[in-house]
Length: 387
Image (cartoon, rainbow, N blue to C red; front, side, top):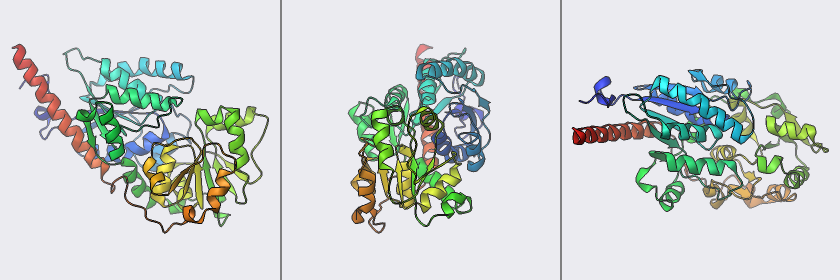
């Protein structure tokens, strides 16, 4: 068998060496169940770009999720989109050349995702092999071009060799863009992660939540919300409701508030960023959740908690269609109106398993194995043709 393919010849059973790139806390959550499943029979090199770098946003998540510390931390840190992505490109390439993985696995829609996708698609090893690229959460679309994340996910999808889609809607988007042949429906790995976490979260409920019988949980960090005073102001106005609002503040949002001319309404309780298990506990006990986070929208659905989305659109349209999520944009009266809507706040309404049954991680690993075997056989055929 030609040396160009190391798959079945190395250990038997299609052993694969995968380099996983993560950089932000939602990616740590998604990578955890896949990493556990992947390491049963394969090798994984876990690379952290350092996009989220302080303890609350990074190291605490690895501890909570009970996954190994990254093999490599690029320590890129914060900065403008261009500077951050460029530095990731510069630091990722030598790491990939050193480890020479069979394939690279990326998650979601961050600058880390974009950088890893660009490096991988241009990379060739000294022996002529090229790594394949697989994208988890492929096919998500907000159709909002102002979102940097929308640009990142589209580029990553079009560069990837294997598109691992969480929903049928995502598969439809990929088909519309001519990418159906590369796509597989595997379900949403966040269901796996949430099921694992909810069994462990109860003992991690922060004290501030235990002090209130009911509260709204708020998260907000997207640039189009917090960096735009014309949007941020009305959103802050809308938080002045008759319930306490617990607000774990993202560093980006805290910086905006600290340099701004107005503060939070008196009922909003700011707290430091929380770990993953604390966040799952806060979500599960909340009366409602208000957020601009895609991941928190989905976790709200998995927890059976009504969600108000502080954006003009959502990638998770299914949660809106079944009545568990409401898009309110920056309307200052919308949060109070949603909380007063008995039909929306009713927790007895149907909640179908939109994102699978918690077995996405083994499905992703199986898809990687199949793709690796196909890629290896294709290389063999190409080499035999040349010979």
